[in-house]
Amino acid sequence: MNMVEQLEAAGETLSPAVRVAIVALEGRVHELEARVKELEARLSMNSANSSKPPSSDPPGRRRPSKKPSGRKRGAQKGHAGTYRSLLPPERVDHVLTHRPDECGHCGCSLEGAAEVERPRVHQVIEIPEIRAEVVEHRAPRVCCPGCGKTNRATFPVEVSRSSFGPRLVAMGAMLTSRFRLSRRDLEAFFTDLLDVKAPSLGTTQAFANEAAAALLPAYREVRRAVRRSEHAGIDETGWKLRGMSRWIWTATTPRATLYHVGRSRSRRDLHRLVGPEYSGVVTSDRWSTYKACSRRQLCWAHLVRNLEGLALRGDEAARFARWGLAECERLFEAWHALKSGELEREGLRRRLVPIQARLGRLLGRGAQGGDRRVAAFCRDLKAHWESLWTFASVDGVEPTVTEGNLRFHNAAERSLRRAVLWRKCCFGSQSGRGLRFVERMLTVTETCRQNQLNVLDYLTRAIVAGRQNARAPRLLPTA
Image (cartoon, rainbow, N blue to C red):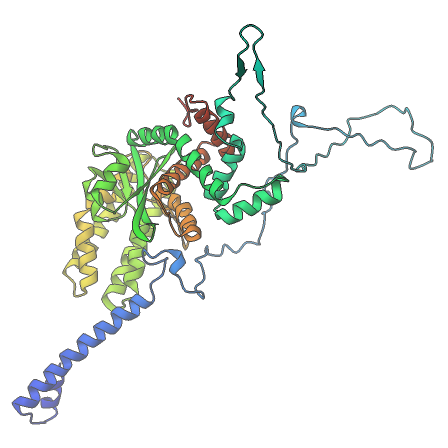
């Protein structure tokens, strides 16, 4: 019953003008209430219930934590202890033997006494004093005794290109990218470390240029592997080039991760990342560009965040979100059962049938409801319905994992974290060469991590090969 009906029921006589004014004011009140609700929901959004990055969270917001288990902190009873194992003898540089001089019981001398059992061994790992090794190359001019002409040898190509060795160049490139040191911090680090005049700021940039050139073969190798993969997680985030907007893309597979810095979030840059003919399953969010992918798996961590954001709107949206989150919880319980071995793949499909049915009814109701945000969300999910369930039939594809209150994003989102942290420190790149350095260093360091390779060792070997105009070492296993 609206206000006009209430007044007339109470015996009030209203003129037509007053009636029209009351109806108009009631409509305005409803409009303002909806706007306030929208703004309050937007104000409450953070990285846990929307696609906003964690860096945008206000200072007072606490990070989500696991549900309390009721157990004490630390290792539980029956937990197998973890101890540092001894390094093998060939890895030990020095052995110091400590023998007692006299008996601690009677004072008798123990000189020459026989050992009765294996010695107790305690290994200490220490960093030796670091002092740069300086190798001076000389090329004297020599006079030929036969013709009287003078001759001078040329320096080896790997020596003549730089005043700094490949391992030092590799370390500079790694500290700039993987450990996010600024160029001035890198210069200060080498000043304290080398005991010689440190590389200048311009030279540290030369380190980055040389590393980027040396890593081109490895980058192409990873790109080929990703484009041939059966499934990949893809995501993108912002980057800068001299203050102009750019986007850094990532495609992640179990053995390789590829990065590409493009101009936009468009289909063109997606094709530059994985190729226009990529036929594997793409795990992604619902950004429209990914409609170009023939086979997809939508990220359920995004859906959970979307539902938590809708819950902030209250009323109908909150009821819808609670129902949706409950179905997500049931889905992840079934997925955990598959991962732990409690379910086979066919058992997972059977367990998903009632979840699919209930979720389908929920989307149908939400699409017909009065909340426009919920209706739009439901129509979008219904349009991508098949892509929600690819993980049930394709091995290696995951819906992404949720445990307690923690949201574990898909592999592509996790691989972007290094790029985001680097961007916060350097504010983007200043040249096209800088963009190539970013995408190649991120590609190589993340792929090395996936394959348990030493990043510094690989970078050094790649730079040595580049200086010798030799074939770069392989990054991915052949099998």
